[in-house]
Image (tube, rainbow, N blue to C red; front, side, top):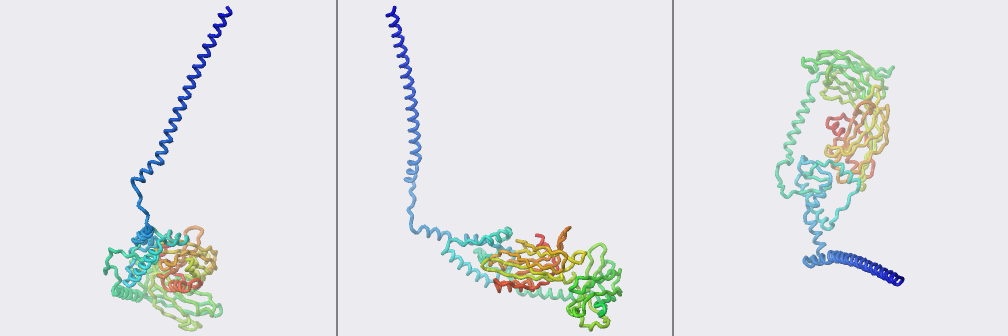
Length: 475
């Protein structure tokens, strides 16, 4: 029994060992197969990647060889860039642009500007890169309206010549036409100034004891009819400038020959009478609309008639006027331009004898300065507000960055405003500076350009704001 049992145990162990060994071989074979498959897959992936990185570019390079580089290639490319001057013109047109409605330039100016443009094109052939402008001047160009188109002028001092454009007589300045228009305007102005507005009778006398000028408005005759019924409702406003104090007569209904017989007293020292100016405005009263102005009378020198020690009776023709030309005051400021920096400095110094806009007899004035180009406001800056005064002092500098080649195409619009806490601010008076301005505004601007880096100060009288100026101030 023992031998039989021992043999059975040995056979069983042998069988178990054989089974375990077969299982071990089978497991090893499976693992070996997995490792072989993974290795083949990795080898295939590496082969594909190497083919993509090396074989394809080499094949492309072999089929499409690049041309050999020549030492003249950079010069050729630079020349091709400069061959078409219209490309540079496109860059130059990025400057301030003028409307097509501007009049044509004379032929001699066109020829000189064409030569200047050709010389600039030759310089661009030698230098292919444009010098970069300053940031301030780029901001100045960004403020320009985009809809403005270039006709024949450019603020970059470059003139663009259209090859297809042929010189014609259309749009050219014809002096004879302007001369005829000037004659017509002179005739019309003469007719307007000679328009019969009637006459006014008044008397003047100086009261030495009270140091006052006595003005007696007596009557008016032959006034024009302003109403539909063929009559007027006249009254008279009286000023002794530069004072803002105003007197007014009663309104006389439906008459062209009113008799006023009203006296007014203006306190003024006798020594100051020579510098004073008596201003009388005749109006037609209208209950439901704006009063119509009939005309005005201005006495520049009160001692022309007499020494005013006794009452002097005076007759004067009423001059035709559409608006009251009362002195609105003056403003003093200085101008200084630095061409190298492209910087314009306007220093508002002070104002004097401003018009009273409030019921207190004073105003709350401040100064607003606008930079204008072709009727469009580019920038606007203001001073501080001075309360309850007609003679404010500011001493405030206002700076604009303007390129030197744009100075002939811009202007400054100066408005003296009365600040109101409730409602809209009112315009006391305005004035304009620039090459296209008139009178002292143009002379002051030209003097500033003639003496760069030097502050030039002047007094300027304020004018009434026209409709176009009001529209510019609103824009």
